[in-house]
Image (tube, rainbow, N blue to C red; front, top):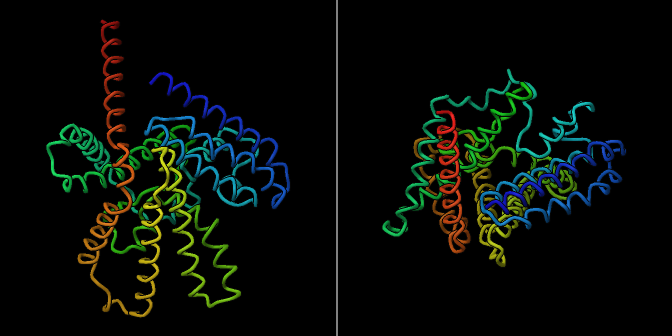
Amino acid sequence: MEGEIERFMKVWISSMISLSYCYYIVSRIPKGLLRFLSLLPIFYLFFILPLYLSSPTLVGTTSFFLWLAIFKLLLFSFNQGPLALIKPQNILLFFSIASLPITPKQNPPKQNHITNKPKRLFPLKLLLFAMIIRVYDYKQNLHPNLFLPIHCSHVYLSLDLLLIFIGATVRTVFGFEIEPQFNEPYLSTSLQDFWGRRWNLMVSHLLRPTVYNPTRTVLTSFVSFSCASSAAMLLTFLASGLMHELIYYYLTRVTPTWEVTCFFVLHGVCTVVEVAVKKVAGHREWRLHGLVSGPLVISFLAITANWLFFPQLLRNGVDTKATEEYALLIEIFKSKFSFQSVVIQ
């Protein structure tokens, strides 16, 4: 584990050096093609850096953060996105926004479409996450079907708690609010609601200007606006699927099976159909009530995730390795805390 932490530090030192190049040199290049070309070596470096790590926890976090950084820098090459809004003097803020899954909230009073999470939910989520990690110790004694809600909750809580911690740290250091990354996805009433307004919103906010909008703009010249929007939506889901496929390769180091790509393509197709049906239905009385559509959406997400999203991770024991790392970190924390207590006494 010590060697892995050392490699982890080297990976992020390399990332910071690369971002220094972006801050001091690339930012002085006129926006457009030339700036984009100057960023290609950084894109390649961020593409291969996760391969130097083997810990599922560190690989998953690093690859997720670096891929978000690639999309942010892609927007930055055309003077768009969150990096284009940073004042030239603030290099620490540039590093933070580029390398962390955060976006400063631009108009806090107007951001009412996402409700603030009650503070009491954080300790509850923390407790549930600890219970889930503990349940893995009894994996051999439980029926495999019982682990479907456990796997879904594990993915959500691990990401949500990590991003809550990062958000609290950023607010403490910089003193500004950031856009929320999750909006209680278990309350979704449709696939469009889940993927567009509740789940992993940072990815949605980055894929929209980098994939969805350009595709729709180009296709509108050849087909109707509705067809262009549908095709752009499908391509956006495909891009997300390919990004996840690569992250799965970082985690497993086995030949891709394309299951997770199929998962996102399937949801892209279903979301396009859902949007089309809503347009045809028109009036609200023709739509399902949220108390009916909500459980249907969550059930569909869980079933398709069990079919296509989780199998590659489970076959390669990524879940087991991750929980073993959590247990190891807890033991290290306990030993450090016990040692400090003895020294104080």
